[in-house]
Length: 265
Image (cartoon, rainbow, N blue to C red):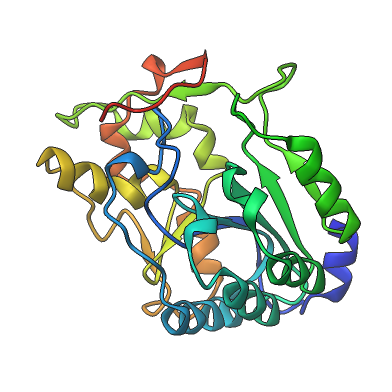
């Protein structure tokens, strides 16, 4: 897949391995340790015209290998079919996946499945222990030749959760936290409102701040604005360096392998 991508892409632009973005910020599941802070988010839906403008700008700066359509729960957006079409037309050669908890897949009409099939959009289900007939969902996707898989913890039947640890005082060593965080490998690049963030935590901390009336500050050094740069290389360079917001993360106190549970906010 990656070799085919390299052959198709324009060789004048740098490659961004991955970025994700949210179609909606709220969710219908409310996972306890959501790093998008979706259980705290108000209902908010992406605007197709605004996102189209942003993505055209991105496509002029860089090539993107892998794009994640996320939320919240992206299937909550009533116009997801249109987004699928527009995104594919802009990023013709990129691998594009919808990340969903799967709950709404049971009731999606044929137009959704046809859109995913026509525009070569994959589906990745964050598989939690829910009362879902996953086999039926898989069969429906396969009948439409839609790539479908589960996002689970290695060696487990279901996805386990991890608990991030925030230092509200911002007294952590930002450089050290950045060095030991997996996000500095470009695994969680997050895009919102014309800006690239190194991870979904800093990109969505506004939901945390709004709900708890805190002030974990996001400065102009914590993101890169796609309209204030001239070359795509600036994006790649930014994503590799520490940012001030890293002082709010205490990576050493993160916990892993936690069973699924619902947030109590």
